Image (cartoon, rainbow, N blue to C red; front, top):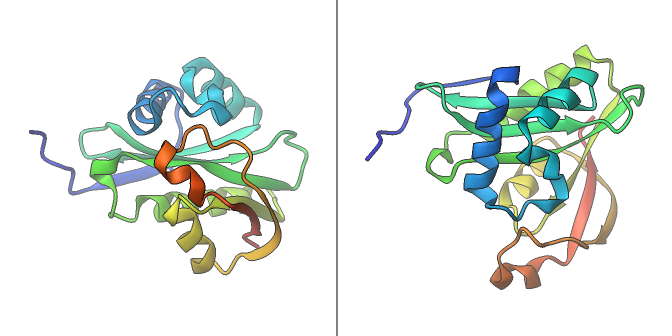
Length: 169
C-alpha cells in the first residue's frame, strides 16, 4: 500500500500536468463528469489554459502525482469575472486543506488577471463547496434548480435541491 504524502505542492497547471489531471478526474468521477468533458482530454486542458478560458491550479503529492485540481472558468477571457469550479481531490488525499490552498492560489491569480469577481455554484452533495462559501463570506445572489446531476451517485441525487451562485469578492 502506498504511503500518503506528507508534503503537498499547489501551483499553476503546467502542460505536462494535463495527463495527471485526466487521471485525477477519472479516479474521482469515473466517466460521469459530463458537465466538464474537457477534463478528459489533456490537449483541451492545455489549450484552454493557454488561451485563458481556464485557469487551472493543481495539487501534487511529494512524489509529483496530481492529487487535486481547481479552476477558474472564463468563457471569454475579456470578462472581468470568472466561475470557480472543476474542484476535486483524490479521496485518499482529502482532509489536508488542499481545496482551500488551491482556492487561495486561484484568488491570487484572479487578482493578477485583474478580475473583479469570482462566482461559484455550491451544490448540496459537495460539502466543501458549502463550507468554502461560508469560509470566504460569499454572498448568495441566486438559487437555481440543480439540472445536471449525472456525476452524483443515485442515492445522493434526492439531496440536490438547489445550486447557489456565490460571489467571492
